[in-house]
Amino acid sequence: MCKIRIGIDAYEFNGWCGGIDFITTIAEGISATNKADIYLVIDEKSFTEKIWILIKSIIKSKGNYNAFWQMVSNEFNRNKDLLKTFEICIPNTKLIRYKKTEIAKIYSNREKKLEKQLTNYNIDILLPSYDCRNRNFKIPRIGYIFDFQHKYFQNFFSESDIVYRESVFKRQIENSKYLLVNAQDVKKDIDKYYPYHRCKIFVLPFKPFQRFNVSNIDISRYKLPDKFYIISNQFWIHKSHLTAFEALDIVCNKGIENLHIVCTGKMEDYRNPNYIDSLKKSVSTMKCKENIHFIGYIAKEEQMEIMRQSCGLIQPTLFEGGPGGGSTYNAICLGKTCLLSDIDINKEASIYEKAYYFEKGNPENLAKLMVEHMNDESIPDHVIKKMIHNNRIEYGEFLLKSINEVISNETSIKQTQCKK
Image (cartoon, helix red, strand yellow):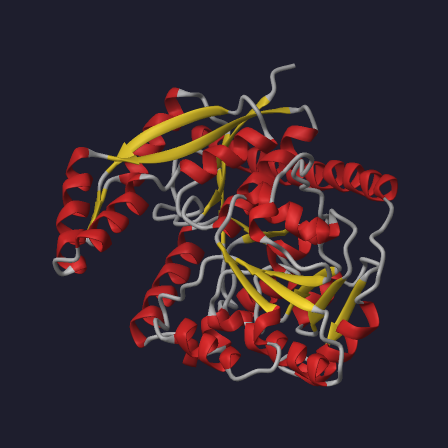
C-alpha cells in the first residue's frame, strides 16, 4: 500500500522559534505513525525578490551599515533554524523547494509556484498553510489560524497591525475548506467572530511529546545559578514577563534570596519597540535585579538543557494560541513543574499533573506558587518517556485521521464534479 505523501508548509513558520516548533511537532507526530512520507516545503526568494529586499533594507536602515546587514541576513537565512530543527527531530526529511516573488504585499506569485511544485512531487495534501489565497487550490490542504489576540488586547497592536490581521484572517477563513487550530479556545473564537464560516475545523489534542536530546550539552558559559525558574518566551508584551519579575521581587523581599529567573528568547517586540527598555528599567529598581538573567535567543538544545536544570517553568502569559505556549510543551516533556497563568486556554493543560495555576497578572499569587514549588522534583524519566511515546502516537493518529478525512472528502467532490 502506497504511503500518503504529505507536504509540511513552512511558509511564515520559518522565521520564529514557536512556528518552527509547531510545524516540527506536526511532522514528527505524522512520521511516528509510519503511514506517510513527509516533505518539508520551503519557499525561497527569487532574484527579483532579493533585489527588492536589498532596496527595502537600504531604506529602513537609514545608512546604518550594521542594521542593513542584519536585516539582509535575517531575510536571506530564514530557513537556517528550521532546517536544523528538522534535522534533529526528523532526520533525512525530504525537501521540496520553490522560488517565489512577493513584493510589498502588492504582488505575489507564491501560490502558483507552490501549486506547480507540489504537483510535480505528487503531494497528496499540504498543511498547515498559514496564508491561503485560493479556495480552489488544486492540492487538498488544511489551513491554520493561530489566535485572536488582537480582538482581546487591541492596545498591544497598532491600527495597521489590526487591519492587517483582520484581512489575513478573513482571507484565511474564506479560502480554507479545512482549518487546523491548536486549542478549543481558538475554535470558539472562529465560531464567535466568523459565525457563517464554511470551514471544517480540526482541533489538535493536547499531547506534548517533542523532546530534544539534551545529553552532553555544555551550557557552562551562561554561568547559571543553582536554583532558578525558566521563562522561555519571546519578549512580546502579552507574555507579561513583568508579572514574574515582580513575583520574584516579592519572594526576595521575604528573605528568599537564592531563587532566580532565567529568561531565554528574542528580546524584541516589533509592535512596541520601547517595551524591552521599559522592562529593563523596571527590573533595575527591584531588589531581585541581580537574580534575573537574560540569556537571549539560543540554540534549541541549549534552551532545553537549561530547562532541564531548572526547578520549573513560569508561563505568565496573558494570551496564547495553544495551552501554555510551546515552552509548556517542552517543560512537560522534561517532567518539570509548570506555573501557568489561569487564562482559559492554559487550563487545557490541566491534565498534566504538575501544572499549577495563578491569577493572570497577579505577582503575589505567583510568588506563593514559586516558593511552594521551588524544591519540586521532576517526574521520573521512565514515566515521562512512556507518556511521550503514547502522546506522539495519539497526536500522529489524530492528524492522520484528519488528513484522510480531507483527502476522502476532496476525492468525492472531484468525482461528483466529473460526473456532471
